[in-house]
Image (cartoon, rainbow, N blue to C red; front, side, top):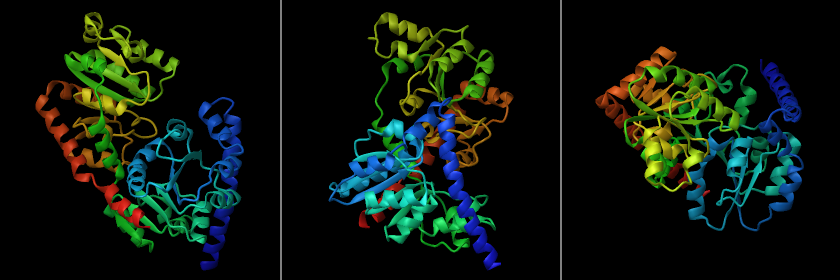
Length: 429
């Protein structure tokens, strides 16, 4: 059995490396038709040479790696805390996805920001030799076999923060030896909950601390720092206004279908994609109402005419990126998109404002969403009839809305503090 397991692990290692090379090659082909795939491929052309040329420092370099922008937001508070205590240390930040890199490539606290070179053994060795990190911190997940092996081999302290584990993951399957080896390369693992720690203990991994999720600290920080968007405030001021955030086409179709059946209400819709064709399609869904696009009014001085236009409109489309977390506070409740697709988007940004939330059925991979449903602060819907029911209830029942909002805000307040727990360990390393 041991020989079989060893051979099986070697086979998976071989397959892993082949798949990564194929993935990169396919991204070149797909890139002719897809912008993100093109960015993914071209962002890695001659990447190691660029890293060798640019990354030079006599001060310790701490490497933070994030899959995308969501994980960056989880890691951001850790970077800030670490730099506060070690201002002379340099921060190298890497991303796997274009959405993360393109949005945060100019992050001021990072001395260098790059895509992560593909996880081949040659790349892992070359990257770590070029960077010579004092320490490596992976955020939430992104378990890269060759990088973790090389970090372990060189004795470089390596951590994962805000990790969460579930029993269906490959680490806990009979064939999971190859994947468990990745976890054993970490110096320490900071997990979000006791259930994750228990699962790791069952496979013999005990260098674990239950720290919570640093996202709570970040969204709490954002809420305190959020400024006012006067045009949006005026739009939402009269009547019951709700926010639909990070929506996809199926979300928008459902919202448009129920909109005529609702009591008088206003809608702020913040789509996940803001390209021209998508915005035009959303605009067409609500063509019988007065619709305003944010780009048309955001830089216009507010006078009596603009104010009247904002108050008369029924739908405001936010056709720009980067302000969603600040928009939620203008809604009496929020619909979070993605639940009828690959999975819901960030619910915490709404919840931290004391805003009750509604979302589709694909939410169970997200602990906070599961928790909020159980507590009663969030409502899950599986079909359009349920969406119509819950939206109507929130529009008409102030007591219910306030109760659910208070549950959401209380949940955030009880879960802040993960950054301090993790950062204390990193600062001492």
